[in-house]
Length: 194
Image 1 (tube, rainbow, N blue to C red):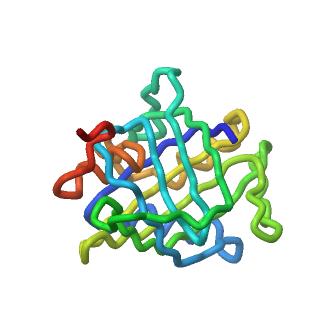
Image 2 (spheres, rainbow, N blue to C red; image 1 turned 90 degrees about the vertical axis):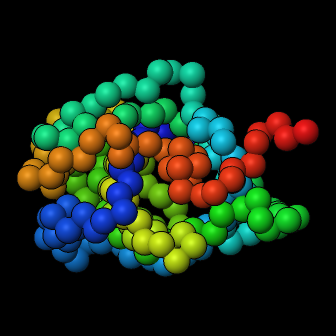
Image 3 (tube, rainbow, N blue to C red; image 1 turned 120 degrees about the horizontal axis):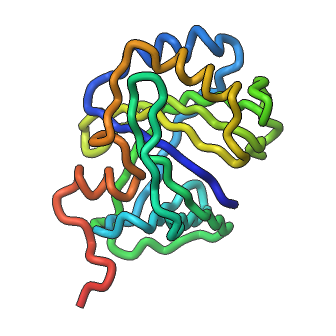
């Protein structure tokens, strides 16, 4: 699967975004709690995680990330390719893996901007909007993410401007999970350790 994503991370609660997100999609938000384990590397282009018996590998594509402005917010739009394998992964030494507890709130929109209810565990195509509370080594972080599996459309942009109105997410806080985790953990595993 190929996606385009913008993510922001912060160590403070994004209350304005959380409130507007909740109000805009009341009754349609899918909430879940889960634990993901990420391989701790210093490589910001590869994301390897294990969740519920699945190994997920994401690779940022060579398409340069672009700066995007939505209202007063600036972020990096990144292109990713994702592979998912049903496999019970042997994680060997756990100290190379970062445990990330997530409380996610999600909503899905189709290519026209209409709310779509996911069926079973299949993720609908379109735009996934996600507000997440993260716990890493007893420290709270918060994330707001946009993930497209189709071309962005005007309806998506107008809605996102409403949700992000009055906030000032910056390029400095916009990054993918590999970059974010490398900035929060003490010593990431070098991709080619000797």
